[in-house]
Length: 429
Image (cartoon, rainbow, N blue to C red; front, side):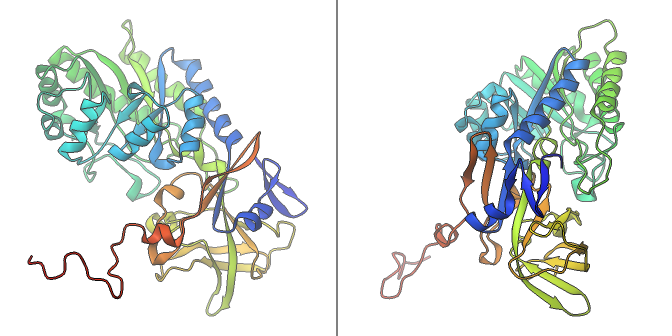
């Protein structure tokens, strides 16, 4: 949280008072530091370059697809990991070339796969059946996502490999998948694995590398295939609580390099590819809300306009974010509070047993590490708005997403207005 500071009791991000922003733009509001994003990219690239001569970093845009943020990452030389046609189209619209994007869908429709192949987008296939659906329209680069036996994530729901995972093809079927791709005319090959999200263990990525390289050897021996890249996916973790130990990138990628060096001893090493999302953007942002009520019952409930429609991670996974009152940093802690939102679900709890000064209505709530999987997972559930977003850069502050309005909420509904006849009225089914 090095980009945050305390100025006269108010929380500042890159020197800008977040309380002033909350009053100016309204809440809920996500405030993001461009500097922090760039610092995160450069830190990661610096470590990778000390161990690998050839590597590729693709941003997992599912973490936060805001076009302004995509443009920042493009200017830093990153590519894109996209999981749907819409994400691919957004990446292209933001200026990424087709060859800078890797399309990694799961259970995609045939139309999505054909569109991506015709557009020259490299596809990372989730199954052999998905590959067969494109028929003769084989993209120049073919990769398969492999489901290794090892899986590890911060939560069960963020563990994406192993026997209970819906993703990828089992490693025992990998040889036949690549044989089919080669026979279909594929010329360039990659391989992909993603074991889980938000892992702080520096040994984790090397374990993933070791597992996938065993599969690579089997495929190479059986099919005489040379891999252009080996993609270890994402999963680089960030600490969500003060005092939690950060992921040691140097140890992480030294370990990965040691695994690669053992396997490719004396031969050319394929390009290492990784797909961080959370690591690049999570700690760049803070989510601001307004205290709307304080209710004393068996427990003390602090109500705010930060709800599970804005921040679903606590309800979905049991995730915990650090929470403070942004305008009361110098005040003494008065007690423990259940921080809840406005949604008609009892799981709408942003934080449990959060120690805070005694809250007052209109205090500003600040939820840290809101740059990943907050805006991208927000919804209009209960008719609540999707938050606006503000970026702080060396040019000052700028709105990079307006909060949703009633018009946005109703945009795609077909109304049967009083006094008007539905165009389908009287027609048979």
